[in-house]
Length: 167
Image 1 (spheres, rainbow, N blue to C red):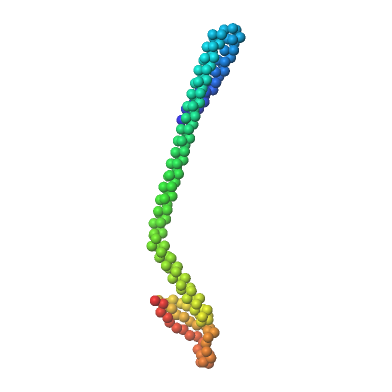
Image 2 (image 1 turned 90 degrees about the vertical axis):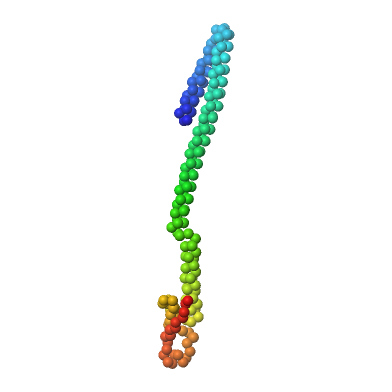
């Protein structure tokens, strides 16, 4: 199509040259006093101008067609890219394990957050302590307690441990 466009432009140039030549021929004929040949040259010039107008419209149609084809090619490339993106997203969702895996991860995060909150509550209410999870049980060791009463201090029992069920 681009070759055809280039050929039409060359044809337009030739017609423009011919139109100019016909006009100069008509002037020469009038200068010589040959009115009939001058009219004939002007008719040929007018015919060449009509050919030039037709060529312009054909060239315009060809330009529109070329731009439409180029746009269709761009749309095809965009569609291909969208298909590839969709396939990649599907693969990612497949690797993630779907909605169930995400919900499981959220549940595990909530459990870990609750565990951390228990540690914070124990640390602030009891004093400094260590919370260790041992096969379903939580061992709480009090390292220093601000609420120890005087009788425990007299017996020397500064370290306590207790087991609590986490289940």
